[in-house]
Amino acid sequence: MTDLPKLQGRVTSLAILDYGLFEVREDERRIGLPGYLIRTDAGEAILVDLGLPPKYIADPEGAGQGDGLDAFGRVVSVTEANSPAAQLALLGLTAADIDLLVLTHSHIDHIGDLAFAPQAPLLLSAAERALDRPVYWQTAQPLAWPDRKTVTITGDTELCPGLTLLDAPGHTPGQLALWLDLPETGPVLLTSDAISRPGEAFATEAASKTAANLLARAKAAGAFVIYGHWQDQWPRLRKAPDLYC
Image (cartoon, rainbow, N blue to C red; front, side):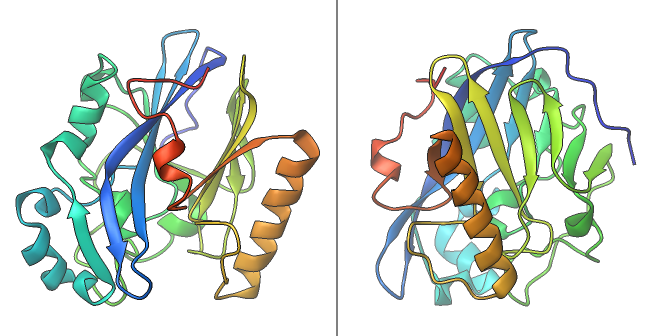
């Protein structure tokens, strides 16, 4: 494991990355698959999440059958343009520019290619990394944890002024949310899958408690809440190369 990296700057912007579109079979919700790129005034770049594994770009239908994801829904649109490399290119960045890779949790639509940006430490919660393998999808767990520089955190952790990772267990044991304080937008809560959408029915008491705590914090601060997979919000959000500053 690697020590927590010392970021030098203060957060200046947030870009939402478009990793594609997925339709949930049960209710035909079409949900965006988001990632995030956070910049600081020291020029640092923090990438959050990686989208679906690359095989979904090459063969969306075949890949889904192999993982059992087709029983849950279908990939509507995941192309090379939705890859982390292509999304970063919209911002004038490459994988080599990434200073830190944050994994909010290890489900299939967030874990992508864990070898991406190998020079950047991979940061995730200690509870998630303690799992034998990434959660991936239901009983399918084909991936091992990568052999790369890894940082684990326990509890809420400030990475730099304007960026704090929040312990948000429930959806997975080591789910993380992010709290940003942007110069113009003000406070922003990225719930990730701790809260996929308003009114979500949570499967566990831990997930329900986490969601209540996150929303109470957001309400008290007047924060802009960006949900993990809210089909009504996704089309309205600015996507890279546009920024929230």
